[in-house]
Image 1 (cartoon, rainbow, N blue to C red):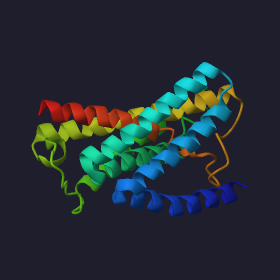
Image 2 (image 1 turned 90 degrees about the vertical axis):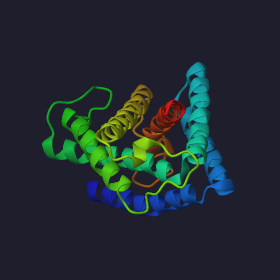
Image 3 (image 1 turned 90 degrees about the horizontal axis):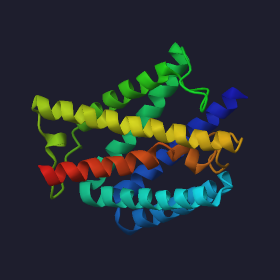
Image 4 (image 1 turned 180 degrees about the vertical axis):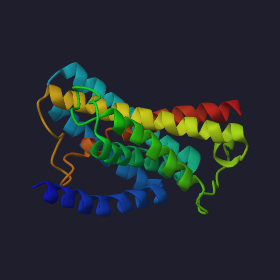
Length: 227
């Protein structure tokens, strides 16, 4: 049973991740359409997850703002930066999973029983490692009008600033994961939906991303204004 679920997760990831990255790189109208469908599906799952009208409304408004932030992030700072945020979120999930499975240890919270302190540490470590690897790849060349020193300068100050940025995004990704887990626990459900085999609903997969993207946009736009 566990093997079958893992197999489904791997197959789904192999299919979905390249498609998502293609749409991010492509940009323009196709990316906007993708964001519209993203917002509608997540909103549908959120509505089904919660019974309280006020919580439903706040959630939908937030999902719209998060989706709009994704558009602004892609439009303002190029697809390379957008993919960097995706890399941070994905590596955060991977680090939490592998460290949690291997080191185990004390549970983090009752909200999500599978989360451990070792998983939190692993999330931070993986996010920094993979973000640095990605940034140093030859194709990470920001061809944008406004180039932020945090991505390009080799001075120690900017290197530290970049790592701090990654850790903040990783933190918000983990907080998003916990928050959606909290609402799933309130509703006594395992997943927000059944859209993605082995993963559950779309909201299950993007719970961290919908918090990481607005956070990253706000940080980067402020860095840009202050440079």
